[in-house]
Amino acid sequence: RREARNARIAVRQLVSGEECGWLIGKRGNKIHKLRELALVSTREADAEVCNGCPRSVVEIFGAPLTKCICVLQLIVDDLELFPEVQPCTSLLVPSSLSPFLSRGLDEASVG
Image 1 (cartoon, rainbow, N blue to C red):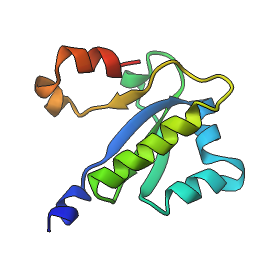
Image 2 (image 1 turned 30 degrees about the vertical axis):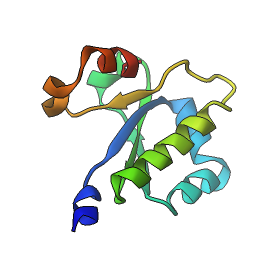
Image 3 (image 1 turned 90 degrees about the vertical axis):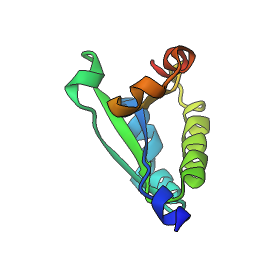
Image 4 (image 1 turned 180 degrees about the vertical axis):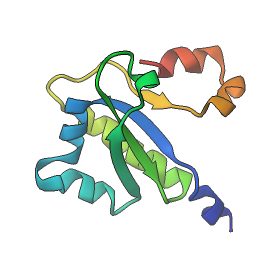
């Protein structure tokens, strides 16, 4: 039961359009491998989180939170190989959780 409840949790990462293409890989090879571990989807980010730059959201869901975090780590590790790597990782957190975030986390997670 606990595993089924965790499967409803999604981890969302904000990436540039170029980084999104890198994560998908040629003919979708990279994203297909990630999808063997959890459901992974990509979409264009909403205007309010883009700050004028074209961005994409990578969403990891459909698996226990521990597995989603492992997939996120694989993505972050792969992005380190991207030639134009960004110096930080941006995660999207639902506004309903904002009262629970510490200021240190907010500073470390917002790109």
